[in-house]
Amino acid sequence: MDTTAGPGVLVRLRPDAGDRAADHAALAELVGAARIRHRCLACGADDHGAPEAVLADGGSTAGHVSLARAGGWVALATSSTGRVGVDIEEIARVAASRFDDVAFDDRERARLDRLDRLDRLATRDAENPHASQRMRARLWSAKEAILKVAGTGLRTDPRSLGIDPGIAPDDGPRTDARLTLVRSAVPGIRPQAIQLHEIDAPPGLVGFICILPDDAGRQSFGSALE
Ligand SMILES: CC(C)(COP(=O)(O)OP(=O)(O)OC[C@H]1O[C@@H](n2cnc3c(N)ncnc32)[C@H](O)[C@@H]1OP(=O)(O)O)[C@@H](O)C(=O)NCCC(=O)NCCS
Image (cartoon, rainbow, N blue to C red; front, side):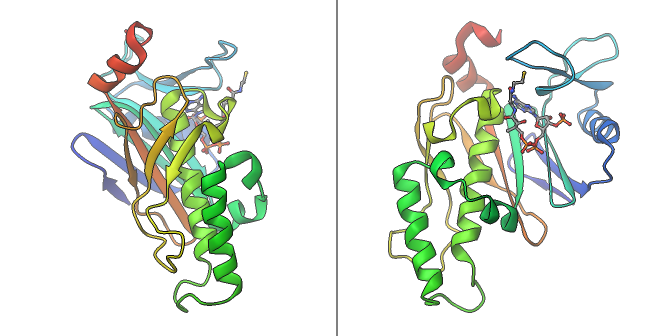
């Protein structure tokens, strides 16, 4: 299942066969690279961290890549326009993790609490019985996608990002409204600079892709990216 989130951006969803090397080979092929290598910004190791597509001679390709796994699926993302982060999440798994306190800022938690109350009152439409759970997974997935662009992942406190869920506090079932990053204390991640798109995910899953266009990246990260 392929989708695009704008020019030069491709997301491919495929069943997770539990074969990490095969995932990397598929990601490399998608961007015309020889292989995927990793480099951990925290410890320098090459067996984990942000993925990078490289040519046979070890040189970088023009394509940026990202990868995520959840619920039996793998999401592979490539972008020729700037750094990319993709994330997919299983709605039920996020709901079960009960990590609101460490994942969401006060404003996000207030919105989720309100949606939880509406869910309990069963005031929403029957076709969307777990709106709060879906929104919780969407907010979390958007944050992970953004933190993959930052390259730090969850070493960065996810509460340093503030996302507007696109609904008024009393809105009921509209959990498909567009999410927007409105606050960021993460170096290099300016809300005006990033592009955040929801991706079509298999049933029970949600997913987001974040792109930091090259021009914006140079302005944000300066020579660190050169
Ligand atoms: C990035 C992160 C949020 C992904 O978490 P997850 O929900 O377990 O996994 P996902 O399925 O969503 O994504 C996994 C992919 O994210 C990518 N990834 C890992 N670390 C990344 C990072 N720092 N930045 C961007 N992408 C990263 C990798 O491609 C990984 O798959 P791969 O290793 O097979 O290539 C998490 O791994 C993390 O926070 N990592 C940083 C932690 C860290 O730096 N620790 C210090 C270690 S010394």
